[in-house]
Amino acid sequence: MKTVRAHLLINGRVQGVWFRQSTRNKAQQQAVTGWCRNNPSGSVEVVLEGDKAAVLKVIEWCRQGPELARVDSIDISWESPLEEFSDFRIL
Image 1 (cartoon, rainbow, N blue to C red):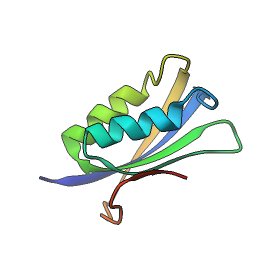
Image 2 (cartoon, rainbow, N blue to C red; image 1 turned 45 degrees about the vertical axis):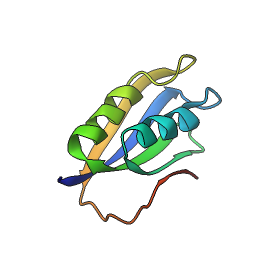
Image 3 (cartoon, rainbow, N blue to C red; image 1 turned 135 degrees about the horizontal axis):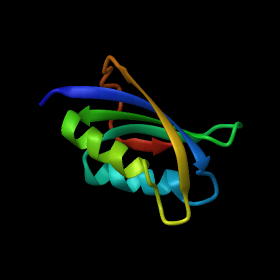
Image 4 (spheres, rainbow, N blue to C red; image 1 turned 120 degrees about the horizontal axis):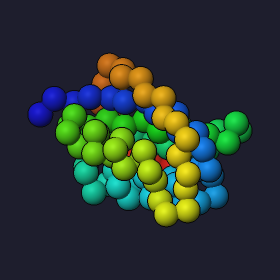
């Protein structure tokens, strides 16, 4: 299993719509670790680490998000995995 790390910046109506909690649930279902947080700009920032196929599934889910969200754009940067996380946290 090859570990990958993706850093996402998600823009749109993504705060106040359960985006972070739903992202954590999805990540845990896929055994992906990392974190997510709200940014002052109104975006949500997410770091995902895990098996590439599992990380891609979480990214694909983030393109739509939970029911009340409206995702306008996602900026994705691939980074070297640090394997520093034991779970997925909301910061």
